[in-house]
Amino acid sequence: MRYGQGLVLAWVAVAATTVMAQAAGQVFRDCPQCPEMIVVPAGSFVMGSGPHLESEEDDEYVDQRETPARTVAMRGFALGRTEVTFRQWDACVASGACIHRPHDEDWGRGTRPAINVSWHDAKQYLDWLSRTTGKRYRLPSEAEWEYAARAGTTTHYHCGKRVQCLLDTAWTKMNSHDHSQRVATRKANRFGLHDMVGNVYEWVEDCWFPDYTAAPADGRVRAVEACPRRTLRGGSWLVGGHLGRPASRLGYDPNYRGNDMGFRVARDE
Image (cartoon, rainbow, N blue to C red; front, side):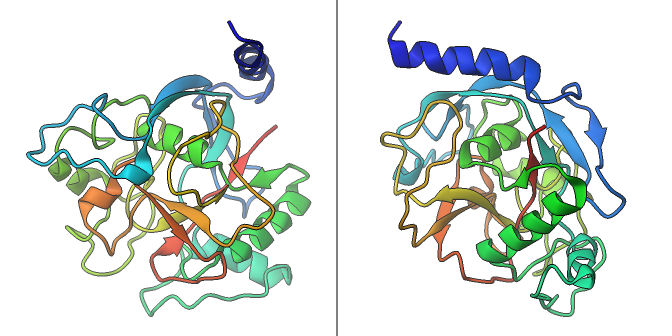
């Protein structure tokens, strides 16, 4: 075993026992207005697209942005059970910590996902949440997001081998009626997470890179000092199911606010 590989495996082994005080699968909330969190277990998975994914689609298209596929070792972490909602965002605005009050496109607020928020807006919310709770809230890394979205599955879609399975598990162009929907109204994945695919695209921490060449194998964030684009994952109500695969990825200006863009929070102990 090479020295670098040994360090990664040792780090994952320690993190698996110390990162979260809660047990894998446990649901918790750090404050009344905080997002509900689920503890995601440590493990490993193959990140990206390739022949390792089971599919019954006639067209097994592989986007080169999702390659090369490689095994990634993950430590445990906590992730929001749903995307951050307007109700949760508006609590930050009411406190004076979040300056931007995003428009809801007249679709309603409450438990619909907060939309029209940029990557920088999301970071402002996370700073407030961290100060409010005394815990370190953050955006998930791209690897953490895909690991949680896949939830142990090895199929083309998180729910099965054909795009039709998304009808019960995700809001996409196939069933959304051309707008976002209330969170947690589709079936959860195996980790208990809702809307990882569909409803709104989700900002992650990573800078955008055109593929996975030289990407870390331990789930860390990929970032550089000059980062003109950040990464979005998960597809949305606006796009077809083929973009609702756990492996699908997109890069965008971190200042952009779109009506199919939101985020969910991650947390270490």
